[in-house]
Length: 460
Length: 25
Image (cartoon, rainbow over all chains, first blue to last red; front, top):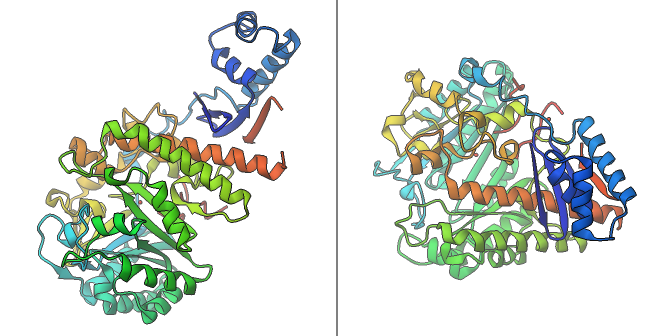
């Protein structure tokens, strides 16, 4: 129904099912907490008892009327009307609109936490995608995208730039067919930066809509987790290349993206280190790893991480006040627009509208499922053969997951990552619990930042 | 003020797919 919390001096009330967000004073905050269970008289008694003479009976009555008005306008205690209509999710017709092309199952770094095992994905042989497979993947996408116009193709690995010539061929092919097919291809790329040069930068600025640059922050942190194959750190090689890339990127989209582990729970220092290098678009996120690994996030780390998220939020507000805002990916929240409810409830689309393609052309529900042979769905030449996997993923929505259906963050999180759920619980309709707790904290911080920025705009 | 409201919720499928914005507007 509602979620209310205090953060950084703000009292925030989120009306979950309507999307309304209110910033309230202490009186209203306490009264909202009691509103559904007590009468106005009982609430008044409780407030007088708590605050003594701070608020008059008139104050309390006015506040009560304001709360009632919000409820009557559908902005507070709103019923969730979506639960009942989403039952038929399995019957929905889905089309493919995005592919993750594993352009290289090989890598020139040896990052310790990599879920792709340096591109081998659980022991698969090293391989580079051929132009033939890549072009066929684009044809498969066009053929299976129904009436969708905007199609997305992500170049992923391993390290995609180890197969740059094929990337160029695939993009050129896409541009040659998109107009006749009535489609728009949006290409994206993730790179560790080792092979970045001016030719690749020029190509990316011309053809790649968003580029993700992998860097973990401080040199000591990055080089500990992201060594090259010969064991040397990568920081000194990639940072100058990233800085030059971003300088030439202009206003085109990019992200410098890092991973933090329990070795650097003070990850705000890594965020600041990346900001100090001149990067304005930054993401840093918790590693997802089994408890056996010495760097995995544990239950006992959550309190520390949440405090760090608070620190990061305060830092971002300070930067905004100075007129030097920096974007943190996980605090991006569009309260007035954003996606429709259908999108919010169905999540990332893995296994239905988003598929991964291996160098051989095999299809998987997403890049993180490529390690699991049982999830091979077909290939780009013969199409999807195991439609039961599509049906399994069609059911993926927040109301199909017991942990999600009453969670206050469900319209912002969309039910979490199916691959993480599978990794920790063996099925895709569960949720990775540590990830949930951190996601909820990030949503709270993101909304608080909105409150602070609104106050800033009003000049209060 | 006692209450400040920061904001007062099949799709077309055209928005970006691992935070997205509505393409239709």
